[in-house]
Image 1: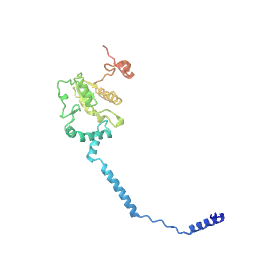
Image 2: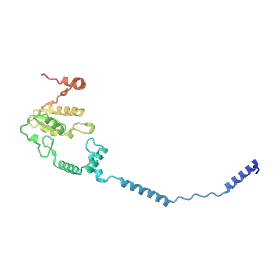
Image 3: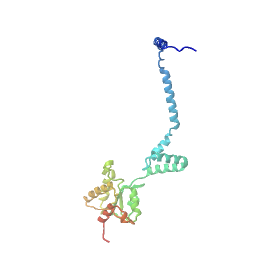
Image 4: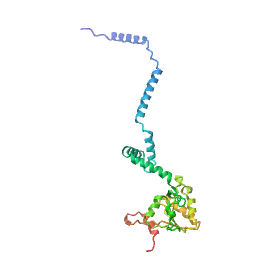
Length: 252
């Protein structure tokens, strides 16, 4: 059985190992290879570009998606789904949509009298001699004009502002064709102007501005009545609507 080393012998061996390590020459680190690092970087970039190009959306599809995003209420995802649907399931519909849009942009412009959309210099309503020339209804959009026409209660003529005053959005009097409205209202035929702008803050401000402007020129100005809707129950109508209906009450 071998004898165990004493403590003095162990300390002596440790000192020898330490001294031997201190005199060993240091191995210098290899200098960096610029060409090797550059080659690795270039390979990484080329691989990344390959994958990007592989999944990149075609430019025509991107243009179609961006065009569909211009529609109100359509976000990026909805526009992308619509674009893929047209190209995958309904190419004939996509072609028809393109032709219809091109034809509409080329042919439709504003009526020279009422400012609505038409394909002719003067729209059919302005040319209709059976309509009352003394009544002029002012609306914000052609859609509002169509809704009033569907009621079959107004037989006068129209002026379409194509917008409403909105200082926060940078929309002023010149942007809603007020000068053209004044010329139409003061042509000698109009005796009453009916303001049919929407009952929003912007619509109310627009109606007030036009009313003051036309009254200063001696024209009679009226506003659409507001109140409880047909078939509505007072219990479920908001207080503001009831208050306005009370102020605008009329004899029966």
